[in-house]
Image (cartoon, rainbow, N blue to C red; front, side, top):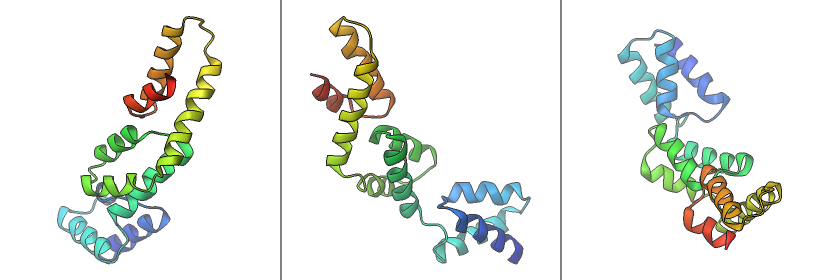
Length: 145
């Protein structure tokens, strides 16, 4: 038990982690179910695992570094079984002005790389690009109109 706790704590100390990630890691180290769950409980209690903190770090990082939109970030957090509450808290870290400015820059950069002269095709390519980055349809349409 002590060894499992130490391994779990060092795994969490390296970077922000979420419960399922730590659970999988401990299971991969061949600890039994009860040990894994007890270690998780202790790690949460000692604040090594905090899903709200994880969601904030994840959302902020993916937005700043990868320039992802809120839809893509939300989907990825849902895939990691993060609660709706924590997802909302994570997305709240993204300032609206920064969000709109980033989308504007992405679309502007993409537009300069589109060689097609047909306006309908250009707008369609920009829309698909923005949606693939996880931005909202309405925002993209507003920007490209």
